[in-house]
Image (cartoon, rainbow, N blue to C red):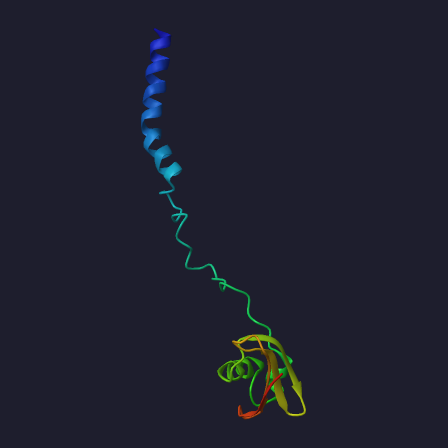
Amino acid sequence: MLTRRFVLIACLGLVPTAPALAQISSGEIGAPPLDVPSSDAPTAPPYPPRPPEADDDDYGISRREAVRIARRSGVVDVESVRRRRGVWIVSGTDDDDEDIRVVINDEGYVVAVRRD
């Protein structure tokens, strides 16, 4: 008789806890779903910020703009970009695999195109 009472009490004790355990295991009680970020948590950028280039601050056009201008002037593969005497010099190859050098001033105008 004692065993039946124990089994009966044990079964009655587990019945109310089964839905609670199901809720806890599914994450429904008091916790936000795992796949949704909390609104209080700061969101990180998808990539680290790019450090500013020293050349970009001192001159009229940036290194990146000089490369874009050089590509419009025929440079396909850029090998080097350097700053000399107030101009950007972009060296590379053109679509015929010939060496090309484009000289661009601070205003963004092409000063010279040299093919070697």
